Image (cartoon, rainbow, N blue to C red; front, side):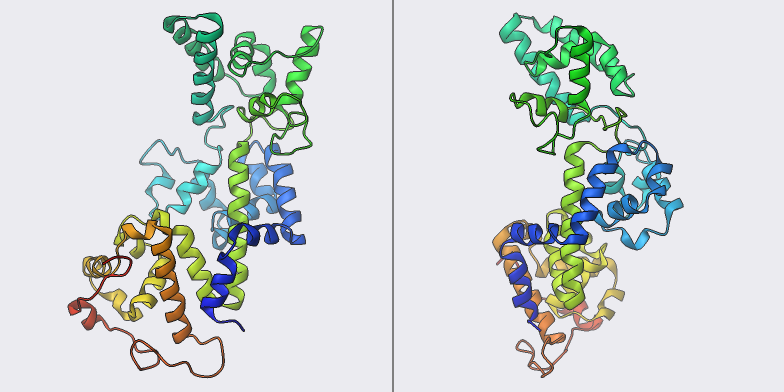
Length: 374
């Protein structure tokens, strides 16, 4: 069996290649294809929970596969209004639940995301000024009417029935629907809007003008014309999350230390303080191993632990790829010392004693060099 440092380096040397290999594994490929094809057909939580392939894929993508059984709990999470600080998901300490609720629009399915709204309104303002010499007041009036109209859209049919919405959107993307009749134009637009723009063989993607694919991406309409619970970009993000989670799980089957290192690498951008580490058992395990702390050190006062971690690790430097690499190189080496991949004993190069760890008492008093900085 390869050592922890070598295994970690082999996986992360070219992460894109690792993810591509994982994506092409038959079982992963089938699961991903099923998710992409069917998530746009879901319009309710009942439908979502009734399809184990979709539900399980989504839960694994956001690192919640250990909670797959808790559907009543997850229903409360997905019904949460994230704009309300007192909603169920927002009251949970574990931020994975907020990320999961944000990825799905079950609380209030919308035909356009906030980002798409901003983008299309910006496009419309630019085109209107350049090509039609519209003033700011008129642009604001047209945009306000667009926003009000979109609030009432629950399907592609609702959108196509409102000529102002259609004209506004087409103007924003500098497009004209082909067709000799209004019916032909609407049929063309229906095919565009119900296409999957991420699929290169879809109707929108096959158009000569690439703006049609961008037009399709701006709306959250599924193949059946319904408002989807996930927009195209979020579907792509969910798939990437699933692939990364699969890489970590597969690595953990051979070496738990590699899985922990991969997890820490993925979560590093979200670490803003020592308390971020203390709130996550896996992150804390990496830090305990790297600093040579015993598990009993976790029983010390939370502020004492936080101050000690902050004195040994430069949290801000973990955002730097080179510093993060150094930190995880040390972790994987320390993990290998404590959990040898080979059957022979490995000497503890740092302490001279195999498995020697720092106690609570030592933690309370010890001051030393910081990792990830000077």
